[in-house]
Length: 190
Image (cartoon, rainbow, N blue to C red; front, side, top):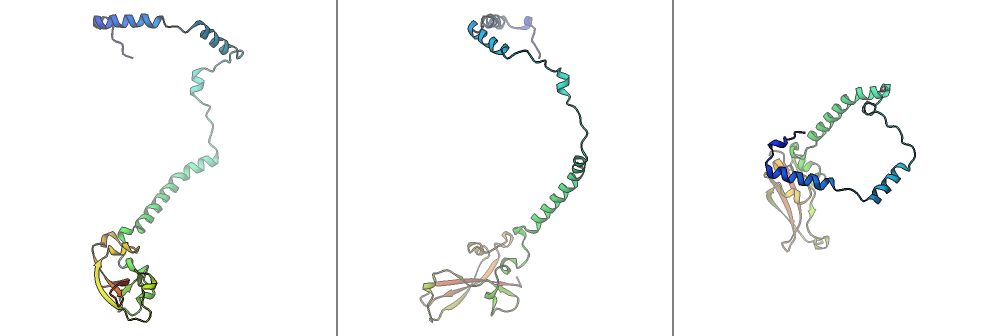
């Protein structure tokens, strides 16, 4: 700790420090408290010899077991292999870099019937209650082109990299002009 020599201190500071030292010297605990503390401290019995600080600083060194040495040797390669596996999994399952035509192939199935080859489509997704579907009444299918981001509104997978691209949609329109269902058609040529 660097101490400033007392001769280098300004006289006003030297006077304040002298008053503070005198005030601190008069501070003593009440005699009854001091006696109670001494009685509790020394009532515990004979004092136990404390070990030397050097012995406390240096714990006894023991030789690691064969299992501990083997685990230490294997820990590094195992952790590197686990990190590589995790990185590979993250790269392969990244939804931002979806392979071509992966947006609709997961949901395509029976709804693809009647489409030209090379096109996939989702099944019709109902937009109205089944009570609104006319029984025996003729409905129309109206084609439209929408942004691919519209797929996300219906809970379908969409790659953020292709969200601005257009996708064809077919709307099932009832006789009164209400939209009853929609399906999305992906052309393989895009």
